[in-house]
Length: 181
Image (cartoon, rainbow, N blue to C red; front, side):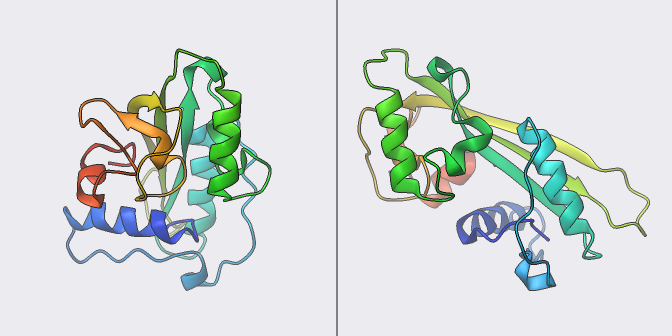
């Protein structure tokens, strides 16, 4: 169970995992009857990922919690763990991108990274230890959006090796290099 209701995130994780475990099925919180918001009150991506994974594991399935976001050097790591609600309203990509562009106005050093922490938590009846892994993909925040693919900050995040933003990459290309990969 992925502790999410974000269809984009569920689809990305399903595609990534199926490369290694072809018959894996990712369930959402709604699929297993876990409703309401999970309070992400951790101070790091890892802490928030564990909070989500532990909640999902209460379903009796292996719980996976993902916390990810954009960390910009010149903004001391912001938007960071607040990436999805950077402009105040959770999940409003357009407003979040506009706020990021406004906050980056006049800044020349536009480097940063997409960061992802994925935690895995096992139900009580399994004798495995919980764990967390972290991935990063470095890039540059552009001055304007390019591309219509992906979601979130993807149209602003330029990856030099590919000469494209995440919003211009195909899903297959992005899944090879992204922070979740």
